[in-house]
Amino acid sequence: MSLYYTQKLLYDLNRDPDLRARYLADIEAVLGCYDLTPEEQRAFRERDIGLLYVLGVNGQLLMHMSAYYGMDHVAYRAAMREGVRRHGPVRAGLYAMTTPLDPERP
Image (cartoon, rainbow, N blue to C red; front, side, top):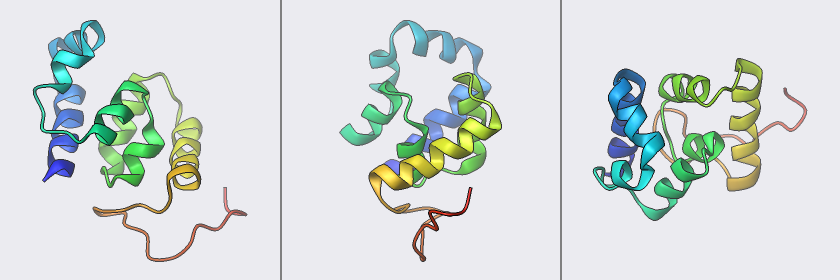
């Protein structure tokens, strides 16, 4: 159940300053503590909020992580839309897409 571990890592990073420091110092060591797929690991390494969104991560968890990455709310929303454009519809979780993305909607 990899989505669980992806969200667990985000939850932990959002709440534990020591883990965030370790994440910055040695991301591989932190990623190794969670049962993540290669695609999920890549999303963390590349700070790809859009891919994490498409993988099904809860938006509230992503919002905190995007702020940690220095993104404002406008950039965060744009990253999610870009993730859908690049990686396809949201695959799982609460935001799984049942209708196509409207390219005219900001």
